[in-house]
Length: 68
Image (cartoon, rainbow, N blue to C red; front, side, top):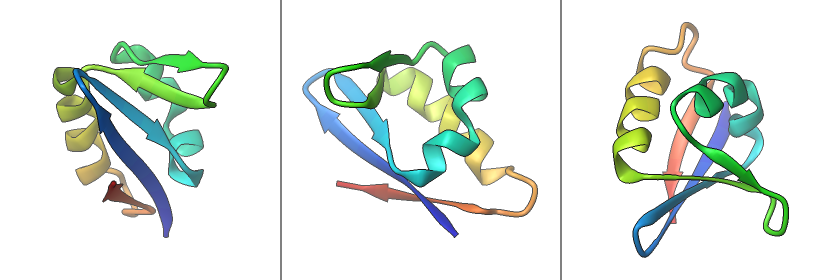
């Protein structure tokens, strides 16, 4: 199972880890942008809620959300 690491920094949600590459097209579609400095995807809490629903419905549940 691949981990999707979630960090909240103020108003932003930052996604990283091996699980993020499985879903990068979906993450991009929901408004996350890639931060080249930190190598993380940055988005809002609302966008993360949508991504979280997608992960929950992910066909073989290959991805686990880990909050830091």
